[in-house]
Every structure is written in structure tokens, then in C-alpha cells.
Length: 123
Image (cartoon, rainbow, N blue to C red; front, top):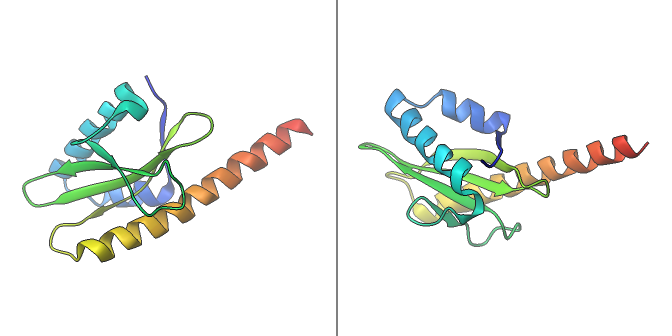
């Protein structure tokens, strides 16, 4: 099983989802835990245009929502669920541009925190 962690941004988004959406997201996260980086379409895909080449999206659909969760595996081989969004009924280019921009920033922050923890352990 792969380790999966979340950001506060993801947690806030997930909490606001309706129950059906939460169930669907949990199912996709469970697939990620089992398959790790091997999880592919239709459940996951690479986010093109990101600064981090390993930035991907989990794809979860419900009757009313088209949910996308940006995630990446960090150097410790942990999947970090960065943030989520609903792309139903919105401009696709704008949706992905904003999702990727925010995900890159959140992953930068996560990597900086990992680096700081490693430095603290060295001293």
C-alpha cells in the first residue's frame, strides 16, 4: 500500500463535498493507495503544463460533478493530495490553468517543508 497524505487546502475542499462525491473521491484515493504511480486513465492522468513533471490528477465523476484532484508523489514516495475542484460547467482551460498553478505552489511548499525537516534532523 502506498502512503497518501493531504494538504489543508484539499481537506477543506473535501469536507465541503456532498456525500456521493466524498464516496467517489474515497474510492479513487483507495485505488491510488493500491496502485500508486501505476494508476492510469481513466482514474488518473498527467497534468500537462505543470512545473512539476510528476503532477497528476485523480479523476472522479458523479451524476452532477466532474471532480479533479491534483496530486504528486514526493521524494519520500508519498502521494500528496494537493487540492480538488469541479470542472463541470466551467471553462476547461481556465479550470486547468488555475488548478495547475495552485497545485505547483502547494507542492513547492510541501517540498520546502520536507527539505526543512531533513535539515533539522541533520543538526
